[in-house]
Image (cartoon, rainbow, N blue to C red; front, top):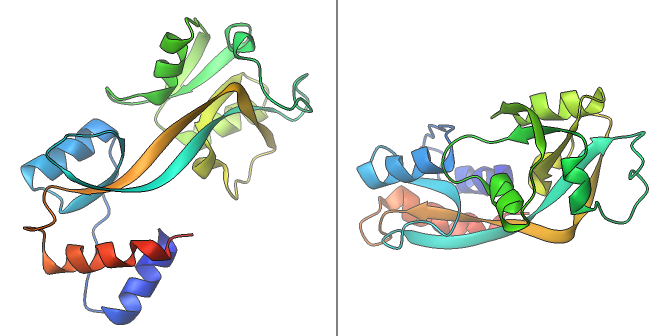
Length: 182
């Protein structure tokens, strides 16, 4: 999103931003309450919201460099149950747990956090493995390997506001700039 914001600010330098971090459930609540004008959520979300789909983000197995599957084409789902697992999760809408449920997996969860950098650091030190979204894994400072799962899994990210018609002029103009994302 930095490229979208950069281009938007060139044309609208007087618009200020307040970026809040929350889990999907919190952000949905903030949009519904009017606490925030818009947000980025995993889809699907509430049917009443105005949604602009943005990106289909693949979920990847994250393993240490010296892991036996580091050179494999894909990471076998069954292996998720055999090693300590670092779970990136907070809130009710958790895509990683959904993978476990869908495939009847019971990983040995040793650590749960909302901090993706903590997960990558622990994986790098050989304390376990994880599943993280591919977008998080771009330009990371950790010495880890990311592999697609043998059964690909994705999350879809969208730009969401309560109602495009009643959204502020700044939000409506910002939505026009979403085409500049890379």
